[in-house]
Image (cartoon, rainbow, N blue to C red; front, side, top):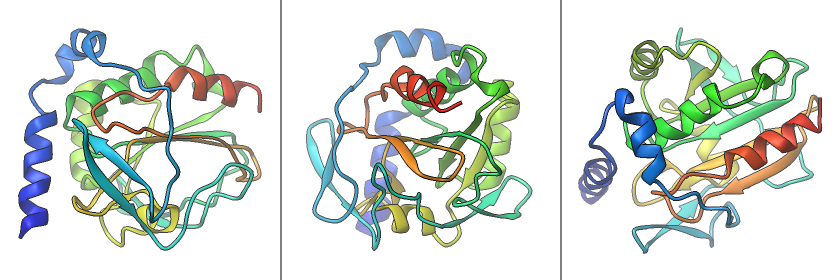
Length: 208
């Protein structure tokens, strides 16, 4: 029960705007250029309060992104280890229905400077596929693939990106090359801050 209360509290803290306000909100959001390690024994913060990370696996630079089955918006299984022969930017967010996640997803979609023509842009969260589809439609985002870890939570567990007390994914950006090797990783230390998305895009550009 306490996890449900904590999750509601987090969403209430982070919520409060719609997609139409993204530009104004993003201007007020800090960009955190730091990173923490994924996996058990590490933690992120929310307004300074520590939240431990959990998972049986861990994502690391220089190693393959762990296999994990997630769901597409059409409720089809997708293996995160399958690159489809493309460089990928994987934007991990707690929930698309919060201002920070909204801004992070819009930046990925709208400020990639043409990367979307050669790189697969992915947003993954615990949101239901239906919620992701609704968000993409309302935000008019068509160049980002939305994937959900709601079912088996394999992505969070296999990568060590599960915020244990909340049952949500930690905010992170992962760049993999065409062979599924992680070449860039930022696990954002403060949940309410934006990642350094431009650094991730620069890393992806070098892999094309």
